[in-house]
Length: 536
Length: 66
Image (cartoon, rainbow over all chains, first blue to last red; front, side):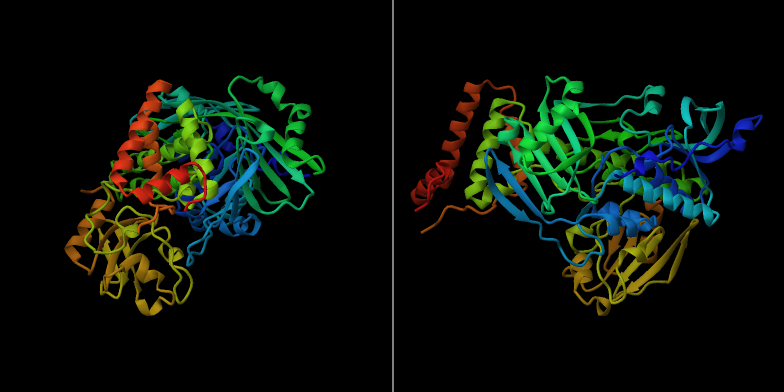
């Protein structure tokens, strides 16, 4: 079977830093080599910022964990040079079925909007993503990029100072000390760093347990998502069946609150449950089993001077709606370009406060969405259950009730409405590309739009004049001149102009819109550049 | 003659559902039942049209709609 998570991918080896007489100073240390920490490190290294990743483990994570990757994270991974293996390996699906009690109440076909390089989402085990990210780290190292990854390096103490951070690291050969100008904490929901710094992590605990099992089936089950409310094989609870690559199926079974976790996790207790669900004649093998409870909570502040929290370390959601890894990747996408400008002296440190503002906003949106799904799936009061069951009964007969059925809402990128980096919207254009939005992709005569906007400030002009380059206080903005003549499907027009006949967009390195107007105005766009970099 | 709308028609359906649930927070079952009854009457009055109301009664009973 699959041994990918049993092989060290960044085995411990002694580093010269361990023999230094005074603690060596690094630009950025990332703690945690999960998807979020690796993405942060790759993003920085690609921009020439020196970075060291440390992790107390030395291999990819065990079990499928995050399995659903949405369009926006795929676009981010594309910029990080990791999207191709994701798409090659991932599973696409578009049919979902909803069951209530003994019957199927309806099925649905996800109608994807065309004209995007990436699908709405793919299913893929987290360990594959981590492997692809480590592969990318190795590729960058081979190219001489300033990135290092150290396995079995565990942070045992952290000290904060006005202009740097100190950490003590335990290794198989004893401990050593490092200093960093900046530290990014991506050490997961139970973040030891957060605990060491004594920071809050408050929110709502859901009193429930879920059994998750990765099951390898020979059977030719369809590539569909099946969700059961109150099924006969798991009375009063819920169940989910989801396809992953390699003939692995992810099964989530709600167990309720008062259970004996160790007892429930034993294969002799898991297998009968799965047989009741899949049918006696289906042959399967159990690859991984875990029981989890969940919470929806976040830190009050994601930035604590030189220590910046990202991913589950900063915010935690229930798994419904796939908003954990997906939002963590959006954190680092938001953070890394800002950190680079600050490190290089091209923007004030206060620019990093906008990371806090924007990603707290995103976290709250994700927490709200996943809390609502959880409340629907596991009603916590009698009336909540009555209403939920009414929705399900009606959904079988009437289309109107189906949008109310909530077994998880697809993760879509957060729009940073009200961000201090946005300039007022001055174009009578489509709502979806207003300032704060992640740029929607569009097919052009040659290739897609988003890769042309990657990793730098861009002035996108559509049938409008503007200088090819603008320099404003250390920030270089390059023009991407497009015309509706390069818009074979009208996607560019529909997504960026609407009724307007021309448009000029200032686009941030993370592909979010900072400002837009019908035409170029030197003074106003220079102000928008300063605003987008925390200078006014 | 008008017909009962049975296709999705609520703006921000998730927001509305959350607001509806929140109305029941902290209520006893009896209080919740009473709230629901008042809501049915308020919405019925808003609809007004007797044909539509009869169709709504049938839909709620999961019966065929005439």
